[in-house]
Length: 297
Image (cartoon, rainbow, N blue to C red; front, top):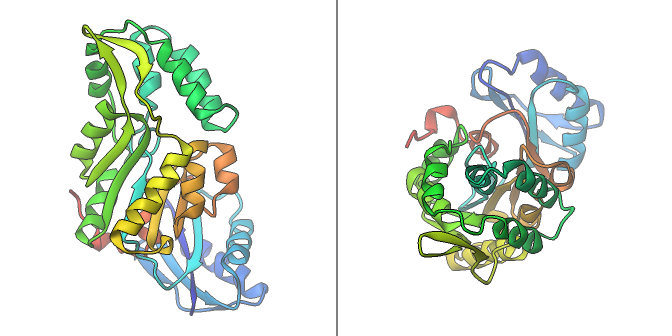
């Protein structure tokens, strides 16, 4: 079978009936299906198939499982395990938008979060929106960044994702439109090989309201994906990119496996693969890893 459909749910959330419904949906539109392979009992399973394009299988399975909390990823069976991971940070590897949380230290979280929401859904220019939000933080003591960091939580599955891919020989990079103060700490905690982001400028113990040039935005994320792939001597088909905002969309669309993770509507609609129910371990199941192969840290 030259393609595989992966069904992923929360632990205990994937039934045999759902798997059979997806298989029958593919068969009805002309696919030949193979024997299902459980990657994790009642959580993730592969369904090999042939005779359909991935997007056709994806659409048929989604229609069959409408309303069920199951993520569906259809792709070519060959080359599933990727050799480069590029991940966004805010609302992807960590559960929050760190800039919004930092704004909370200044008492203006709602004002800045409203701008963030529009920028992440592609309604505002990323660079302009970033400069506007950072400008509103002028004068904030730098200690506020440490307080924000202490309240920041990792997304479930983040450590497993990076540790497992590293153990398999993949290069793992954190590429964020956020700030080095946070990406450096997240990268060290989670185990990324490297991190790339923006730098908040400070003077006399306070934020100046400026961000260093050049700003790492949508184009720079795509450029970083291409550069790191070239450094590894691999094609983009051997890469995985994951993120949730509009500034992630170019790298998501360019990667061999590009995943919109609990993403903004404009991103979810444009990405070839999306995860809306599972945690970040879904990206391992999508690559054909069994839960028994996961590395905890």
